[in-house]
Length: 386
Image 1 (spheres, one colour):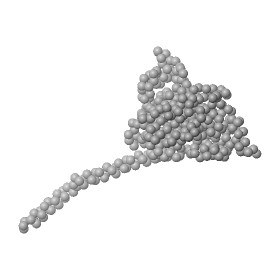
Image 2 (cartoon, one colour; image 1 turned 120 degrees about the horizontal axis):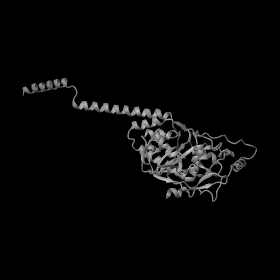
Image 3 (tube, helix red, strand yellow; image 1 turned 90 degrees about the horizontal axis):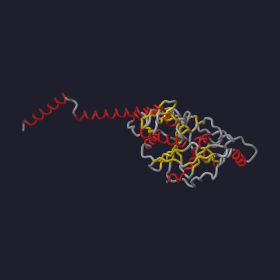
Image 4 (cartoon, helix red, strand yellow; image 1 turned 180 degrees about the vertical axis):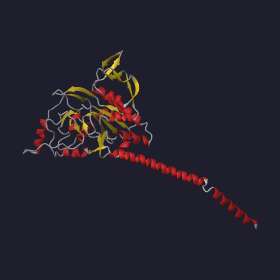
């Protein structure tokens, strides 16, 4: 019994000596290593988060509220367009500022409105536009995507897409820029692209386009994005190219820009394939102009390219790649001020794969004043439901 305390003292002394030689136990080392890893991860994620935030500060923001614009339109608080408001083919200002109202006279407001509307050059065709849905489908939210032929803040609509969210599933609708649609400002049908002129005293361009598409589709448009002409090739390059398949080699002035078959195209070549309206193709050893290359075939190329972009976005798997993409395209697009960074990121990721493609059935028509339009042959509710 007398030796037991001595043994304990010896064990304690041995432990103290061991601790002195090895002050860090395995458990403590692992714990500290874990803390360091977590802190490093947080710092890494925070740095990339800051990069994303800094890049998105440079993105042009545009006010967007179709709901308020519709209230103003329904209240008839201002006069509609002047006769030449929707006949000007010049560049469109995408600030979404409301154009100035027509000066008032001694006439009653309703009389002025009727006079201004009747003064707009009519462009009706028989049998007229299909009636828009009387009640919007429940649970459908739309995102308007516009490709400009200029900068994000000025230019004409060169490509229009409507991304429809039906509660989890996504549908990408390609909308012709020449779609013959009713203008809520004048209550007369005309080409959709002209609506980017806005409605004087009532609505800016993007708001008016959204209202017209809401009336035609029954889909409430929550947000919009406008990409400048230089934005598309930069996005493609930042993604490492997109795969495009062409039956024949495409080019211009005897130079092959898009080889035949399926190829990974860089931004400039992809942009040529999508947007150029005077392409040549190499067939049987000779160059010839591409036959039948109209707006409908161009719409098909735009839709193929958009899905190719989404396919490449699906390959992004880290915060670093997302930050790099945002940095490379910063300044080439504008979006509405209500679309947050997290909301835009969620939208981009949700659009990866699994989307349904949809086009609006149309036929070519000439208006009485000689304008070429694409006339919708059925209500959108039928198209979407089918």
